[in-house]
Amino acid sequence: MRDLTKGTPAKLIFLFTIPLLVGNIFQQFYNMVDMIIVGQTLGKGALAAVGSTGSITFLIIGFAQGLSAGLSIITAQRFGAKEYRRVKRSFAVSVMISLAVTVILTALSLIFIDPLLHLMQTPADIYQQAKEFISIILGGMVASMAFNLLSNMIRALGDSRTPLLFLIFAVIINVVLDLVFIINFNMGVAGAAWATIIAQLASSIMCYIYILKKIPLLQLKKRDFYVRKEEYRVHLNAGLPMAFQSSIIAIGTVILQAALNSLGTDVVAAQAAAGRIDQFATQPMMSFGVTMATFTGQNFGAKKYRRILIGVKQCLMMSIGFSILAGIAVIFFGQNFVALFVARSETNVFELAQVYFNANASMYWILAILFILRYTLQGLGQAKIPTIAGIMELFMRSFAAIFLTRLFGYHGAVLASPLAWAGSVAVLVYSYLKAIKELRRLAEAQEQEELPLN
Image 1 (cartoon, rainbow, N blue to C red):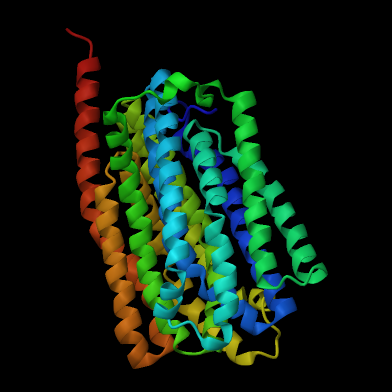
Image 2 (spheres, one colour; image 1 turned 180 degrees about the vertical axis):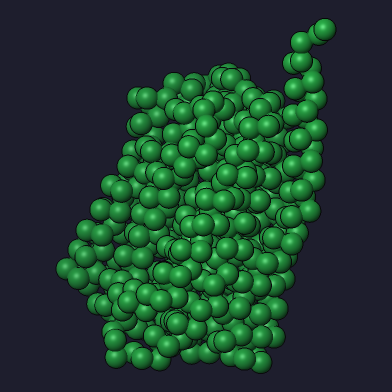
């Protein structure tokens, strides 16, 4: 466990972010491994089938992931305030809420999977494979939810290194099972889905064992589950806005994916490959943002307001710097990575992927700002404003999907994310400046009280 309320903010933020970044990259990696093996062994159609379901996964599992991230902020605030008994209660409440949400989401998603795929205009030639893959992923949602909840709770107590180690082990499991299920057992896209579920389940079990052996604060007894209804209200107020925020953003990607599906298999394959590379490149920005949620949560709980101001400023500088370097790398070298997914002979797919890179990578600096502002506000307990920003993202992505795609084809569709980022930042800036002003006021009042009397 690491206390983020003491020491140099920039150093602590950087050191906390590194394991988180490597962990996020590994998480993306074991998602990407599915795509690489599927694309190279089963062909372009199978790649498009798996890629076309990404937005549905984001919509449904993203809700569960956003919920667990929001719940862990309450835990981080209590840990920062050294209210250790309430940390246990927070974890117990989070387990109960997560379990209920997982059961409901799994049932609903499996019932409505066909209407969702039809709504997204999934091409007929990849429909069956897409349904097979996404049904297994959604049916095993409990594995994803368990890992996200347990790893977020461990990070809330300042440990970003341990979840990384478990992710690395999960990646190894996933790669091995992908090869065995797809190549040896000829399971097709279903093999890739089962490999992912088993890997997530393994990482969840490792998190649970680690908590039992190493983290007394998260070792629950029966009495920890007897909490007041107020505890559920507090946690739902933090978790649901972040969950809905993820889903609102995901609705925009679903609408966009439907528009892309209507443009043909080449476009879907290009978007799937370029999108995975894009997710890799943006991990530093996301990791800095997630770090700020924990850093802000702990320091806000400890009433170290000036320290939050310093940390946000330093983190913004680091994240924007990384975003510029990542953008340059993707624009000039992105096509080399597209070759991991599809054969070089698919020249149209490569050209479409470059269009995506040019539009998105040049705007990474906006995304860097977005992540820092969003997660800082969430760490301060202001979960509703980021949700409103998510609605703006939905609007901008929908605008690109419905209007720009019709006018300019794929060239219009690739503007969806940059427009969404800019719209979200426009909403967040006002609330962020207001929050900064309040933190300064609290810091000044605190410093005034500490002045010695003459």
